[in-house]
Amino acid sequence: MERKLPYIWIKEKGRVVQSLRLGGEVVLGRDQDCTVALADRRASRRHAVIRPADGGFEVEDMESTNGTFVNGTKLERPRGIVVGDTIAIGETNILVRAEPYFDPEGPRIEETADGVMRTLALDAGSAMLLPRDRGAAYERLAALYRFAGGAGAARTVSALFQLMTAAAEEVLESDRVFPVLVEKDGFRPWRREGGKRGALAADLDNIPISSSIVQAAAKDLRPVVMSRRKGEKFRRRQSVVKLEISTALAVPLAVGKDALAVLYADRVGDAPEFSDEDVEWMAAVAGMASGPLFALRNEERLSSRVRSLEKMVAAEVEMVGESQEIAELRTLVEQAAAVDSHVLITGESGVGKELVAKLLHLKSPRSERALEVLNCAALPESLAESELFGHVKGAFTGAVADKPGRFELASGGTLFLDEIGELSPGLQVKLLRAIETGEIRRVGGTETLIADVRVIAATNRDLEAEVAAGRFRQDLFYRLDVLRINVPPLRERRGDIALLVKHYIERFAGTMGRQAPDFTPQALVLLSDYPWPGNVRELKNAVERLMVLTPGNVITEEDVRGALPLGGGGGDTPPVSLAEMEKRHILGVLRAVGGNKSRAAEILGISRVTLYAKLDEAQLPSGDAGEIKPVT
Image 1: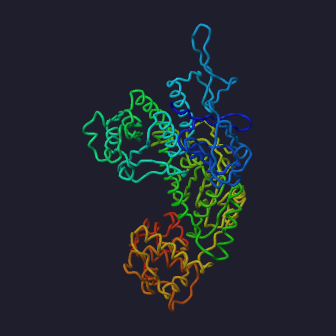
Image 2: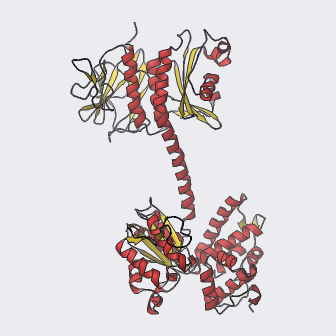
Image 3: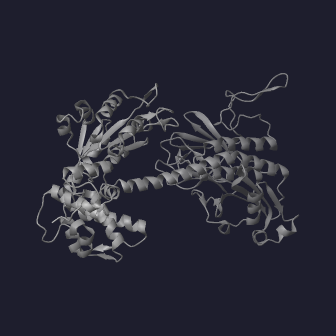
């Protein structure tokens, strides 16, 4: 006579929320990968396990924090359980019962007097709300119903596979069940390992199953059944003989024409062949699991991609340095990021104002929304308004379609306006209105749009002097200057130069696929003594040049002199003013690129507009390269 398996009822806050037939191993805990995930704060992630033992079942505590109790007694070692026992985990009771849970007060399927079925809403958390016929068909339908509810709630591929395995073991009475992922480079079977989480094997060779049937199911996208009694070819296969497989069944999980996985089951010894009903039932499980598996795998890929991008972003926005100036800057960034006020970042060209803006965004409550970056100096006057606020189709020549502006794209997030001092007076008025009201209107449009944006502006100009000269609106200045962060020039934190050099050397070595070279002490001294008028941006460019021009594993003082404009700042060069050094630096870069203004601006890390402004300010020629004379 077949042994009747008991059930466990999961009772939370006085209500039975789940009923599960015991068969294989059942892990209980807060972790979503557990067979039964408990919504109990006092439960450990993997709290206890119920497993077959000596013809019955036993429960064992998995070194939980708050312990596991059976009938009020704390477990010190594995203990057998029988119908009528109560297992307590935190505030959750697990009742061992002979029958599945049936809620007489809850929604169910009822039969009317005329025999017509009417369907009421079903509670997916209550597994036993079906007619109480105890036949085999009922048991299979009930198991399918339980699986459907669990599959939709599975948070990971491993949790979904665990549900599939438990369901197939229970209904098909299989000796072994393995879900197998189908990937571009082959198959990866999943299996449980004791009380631990399930794990994916590297390939089919690591799991003792019939690989040919798995491959056939994945290729043909239909169930495949093999029997040792009926299939001569199957009977002779090495895996069948070695493992004494009597019958094997493989059912594909697919979306469209793409196989996602294969659910494999077999029986060993003299067990009977899988029936047509077995195949149909397992195909139903596979069909129910295909959608959740597709979604979970996509989620895993996206999560992996997000983690990778987050690491890349973290590397790009790392604030390198141990000086007092950098420590104070970090503190100020943390304080400013916590609030939603607008920020004005000041500092010379190349100090890292955009880096500070990115850190402010990433550390703020708006970090999960967009960060839009716009260099105001790089915008032609005719396109600046469209870039900021967008335009509608036909607003001007070339406006062939509606286009959102940066304010729209940044809504809910942050808009970083670099070189804000370059904005025209007309655009300053419109920017002020957008900041004050949170309302914008696309160029050529009539609809008013709402944009919830935090504005971070940056400038290398003295905006207060610009306000006094009438070139920058005072009211806009006050709107932006709620919080001010000044980024110190590199010459004021020379102790960070060696750390910055190491940081950039390692980064460029990684991208170039070569070993990071060492610097001689004299080379580091020369780099530290150089005034760096282009600040961190210039240092980064110099390090990149050194990596390109120095193929060896050691960078010397001579290498550094060759990479720095005008031979560097060391040696017997007489001290000069910062303005003079900047002038010489610009000339050196222009000379190196043959007077190409676009290339020079790119190397200097500034716009062409800013480069021309600096040439005019220093009374340097802005024409052809031939006009640039050596500096004596």
